[in-house]
Length: 424
Image 1 (tube, helix red, strand yellow):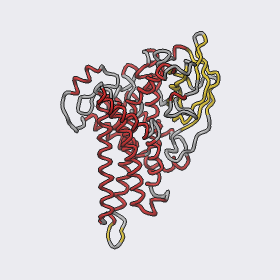
Image 2: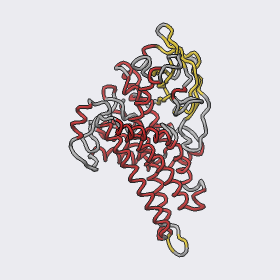
Image 3: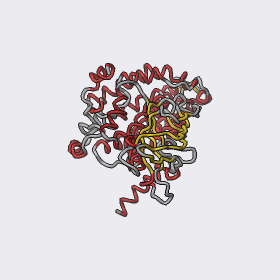
Image 4: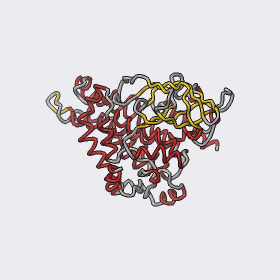
């Protein structure tokens, strides 16, 4: 708590936002809407600039110098995580009544972009905490919130979002994990896969089927649980060594006759799917912000290199083909940043942002991949070598088109939301 109180000197009341004097993640919608009428502005508040500057300094001075080594070893970046927690750069969504800062999504996105500039593996470990917490923030009762969110402000703990399974990712209806009620407990059996922070989490948000009838709609068949990670019957699998973001802890988890008290159910039986999907409206803008951070880093590295490397008697930046590549990269980065800012502002204003969140996630994810690929191309043969920074960026970028809803799923959502405007 000492470190947390100290960082509040920097973060103040945490009640500022973009285009509005922004709001906490769980402020009343009516209050948020009244602020949203203040008009259009791209100007950050003084406090937001301070958040941004703190995160930027942390990324440049403490993350970038060690990022390559963590990528090489795959080791979980415990010292960096602890330092981020001390600076107040983690768990920013936790409500004030649980000891947190209660920041809005926009403010969190500013922090996320800067950390991702340093290393998206580290940023993903931090952002996975927000994903694991969000179901409890939006659907937990006061007791659940104080117990599970409160502890995150007292020490640098991790949590995880356990939904994906070996045979079910985007197809949530295909989940096989079951929860059967016996007395005042639920007995959970099943297997989860690709769980970020899976081996480091103190607790999990878990989605399981509680209605065995296969004809029951997805919206009523599943229930959300809070599960303590040290509960007997939980078997944590090996750390997966992925293409990129290697220091992020990704694992499979087996639940065998795991007993969870009924008091750990979020809202009630059958509410799990809506809770799990509702969390994405708040977490997809920060994921998009992470992709923008990576793209901004790739643009910076490519530009810097183009102003140092000479071919045919001149800097490669002076070749029109290279300058046009840099221009296209800059266009995409700026537009991707605006897309996540719009999505974040909408949800902070108390409005349903599903459409904008999916646009931001899809466009920023594609942008990260395109810009990182072009950065490698500008570096030429050097870009293909691990001694230079852009090959890591290219590997790290790919997951932004996969996790928290694939690029294809985002387009399905966007199409549904778009066509719904005409049929409504």
